[in-house]
Image 1 (tube, protein in one colour):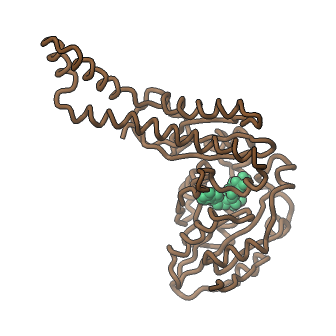
Image 2: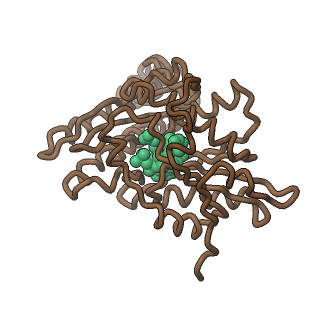
Image 3: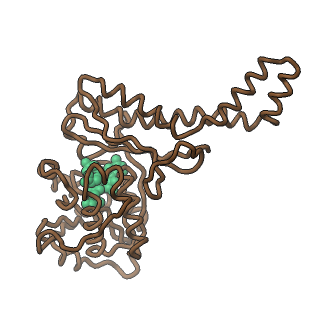
Length: 335
Ligand SMILES: Nc1ncnc2c1ncn2[C@@H]1O[C@H](COP(=O)(O)OP(=O)(O)OP(=O)(O)O)[C@@H](O)[C@H]1O
Ligand SMILES: CC(C)(CO)[C@@H](O)C(=O)[O-]
Ligand code: BAL
């Protein structure tokens, strides 16, 4: 079955004139185009949320304001015809694909959203001004499309956290919905920039997701003995009693269990990921690490080594050849 075509809207006036039935909810999925299945998942989630009566608008706009390197902006893929077909297949009613002049008619805007300290860490440190430019266009696109809900991918975790923060701090009155990262079967997070990777580069790039999974597995392995330690009645007391009885082997086992109980920590999680990245740095097509950080999902500050519980995001950014990639994974410490 071929999907109903989406309406292509080129101007703010056309978007403004897009009507919806009374009571129908509108959802927006913002993109920079070169759509892939990660975007399709966002659009399908939006469609599911608003139902068949609702309206799904996809925006396709490569926002110059959020690019630092001119070369990155120039080579960013632009594939509007394929994007329209993908958006239609995923359930979009309309695609808003304005020109740069349409979005910024007076040139670069004088007044912008400032991301603040949270926008200066990690991605913000590597791409100065990126998050100010991103939030400025997200604010504009929210005003132009006036949705009830906007859908963002967890792959761009810091972006998602900042959009949530802007909407809350500045009372935008729109629901921000997060969509889990969609990956290729081998683990690589889908990204429009993946198309720049040659076969060898792609093999090296797999180290990003492998590093995150290694950290997740290290955490799970530490948590399994910890869970059984908690099931042993008496823990440390029992070890002492057994030593007293000369049952040295059993005491050693109990002490190992106690040690495992305290071993769950940020340093071990980071180390597991770092080991994979270090290996990839030695490949003939090397991975060049930008950052690996275990952060608090609320504000993207680094989690101190002493913290053993709570939600965390392990985030990584690296270059392979001329392509810069990011990925992250949510983790629960001490669960
Ligand atoms: N693999 C993915 N899974 C889920 N959501 C994704 C994925 N890739 C992108 N998205 C989301 O789609 C929206 C648009 O992202 P964007 O157009 O920048 O795509 P992209 O693949 O991240 O491109 P790139 O990282 O190369 O700029 C963002 O909310 C982003 O988080
Ligand atoms: C949210 C966004 C569309 C703003 O340009 C962009 O940062 C993206 O594609 O993630
Ligand atoms: N996917 C986030 C947008 C950017 O890289 O500029």
